[in-house]
Image 1: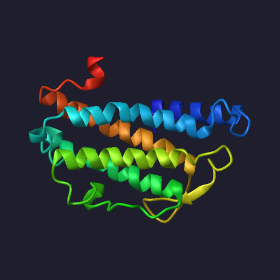
Image 2 (image 1 turned 60 degrees about the horizontal axis):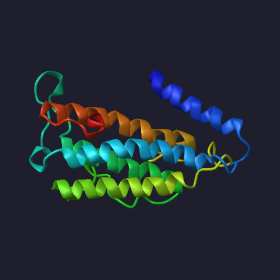
Image 3 (image 1 turned 180 degrees about the vertical axis):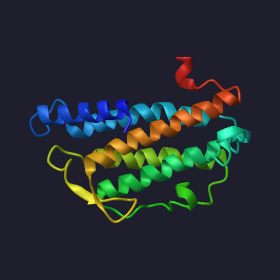
Length: 185
């Protein structure tokens, strides 16, 4: 586990344990939802900034051989957001994870992929809204096997996994001369 992920998780954990059960000032759901909104505000504009003809771009030299395309990175993020959020909510995943967890095979265009990504974030926000100090450490079925995992672990995963792929997408964009919107601010 990376140092920054550990620090993030500990900060959330300490903020949860330091407050009374969902104090009006900072409910647990708001803490996680703010983190999710932060990564959403970076990855969605990046997907929108990449030209449609570059959604099939994937680096091919050196260690990059066989990696996901830019579009597959975005749809993979969305597919995992849906799966993890469904587990947090105790619902059946409303979408198809697809091959290699890249989402439905029907996703072909930039517009379809960006819509899928936006819709996945909306569903993830719905999941974050259900988190409370009381249910955060309760376990739910993992979307990646039959084991039980704490809701908190899945909530952290929505952010950490998305930022991981955001970083990869930034590299792809820069390799194509696209400055990420977050870097233009």
